[in-house]
Length: 467
Ligand SMILES: Nc1ncnc2c1ncn2[C@@H]1O[C@H](COP(=O)(O)OP(=O)(O)OP(=O)(O)O)[C@@H](O)[C@H]1O
Ligand SMILES: [Mg+2]
Image 1 (cartoon, rainbow, N blue to C red):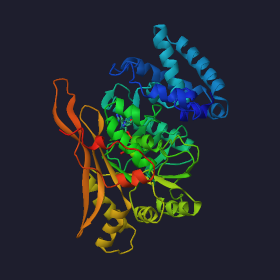
Image 2 (image 1 turned 30 degrees about the vertical axis):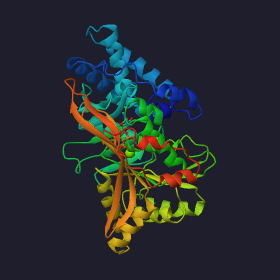
Image 3 (image 1 turned 90 degrees about the horizontal axis):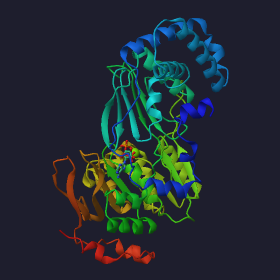
Image 4 (image 1 turned 45 degrees about the vertical axis):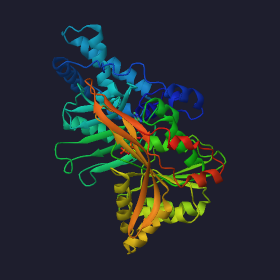
């Protein structure tokens, strides 16, 4: 495996990210990981061993010409570093067991060529997020929960070297004059870096790992994130081209839900996805993926989501899928939804369907068009049909907490009807959240639309699950 794949692909087996390998992947994905909740076991050097490693590393730098190393194949570079390190260790009289010796050599190789201490985490498939808060604190999220790892960098300088390596490999740069980078690694992982002076306690790095586990809607049902009858409704709504807004807080599963429901878009439709940065993995044949671009060093060349939305409308899309609406592009999106581009899907950061509507309203005002509030609301209420509200619970689970239909307007207010909801009633002694999904008894107005478009939805799903 070449240097690029190893660093940017996080050393994950290539097959796991191959798009053609759909069938196997989907089967594997929907099973709960067998090792779920097993503690994270990492082989980490002790402080004394670390000190020894550092002294060998410094000696190595004195004798090794790094500029020569960086020009050669990774495999060969590792071989040369290994040989020189072994020689230096042998010259010391420190007794080392073979395992520690191997670990020290590997750690030095990783510092010079790879992602340093992070390498220990990159091979662990249960890790969803890697969060570095300064050099001493490295957290990971596994099975929906955050845990502090024993992984450490030597100091902020060491951490910055690794950050520079990640950022420069994707053609970007980070320094005090441009201290923030939000980007997508070549393997699809999302990375955000923010450094001093903006990050007060030292460089901070957040990596959302490329989801090897692409969850399907049925897989999410098995995880109890929604019920089969809610899934049936969402399948029908997606097939019938309703405009769907997925709302939720940070990490509540919005992008995952968007991916999962997009599987029900018929194969013959032309989809354009617009993102900042790209992370969707739609399993459909006719998809065009567009991604925004930040301004260059001279402050030029920026392409915003708004530019992309406008451009996409000239590309004859059947549907547009916007990863997340955050600003003025909401105006263009609503216009598109209201002018025949039905079946559009997007996500928004909000804590309730009502809050999602308020956010959209604010975003439309960001387009700077001075539209009266009432007109904005009318536009929202005619464009959006369904809002899916997601929630993230303290036990790490993510669930649909409400599905609501946008009914229309009453005076100045957009009216919503709740069709399904999650009633939380407690938490057990193991910290697991307890609750129940139910229908509210309301038969959504869109059912006529679904029927017209040939989607068969059994009406009892709206009434049989009341509680
Ligand atoms: N239903 C679910 N059950 C368990 N884990 C989930 C579920 N949905 C998503 N996840 C996991 O939660 C994490 C966050 O998911 P995702 O990226 O979809 O959230 P998001 O709301 O889009 O986050 P952000 O606010 O950062 O955009 C991922 O690691 C994902 O694998
Ligand atoms: Mg997201």
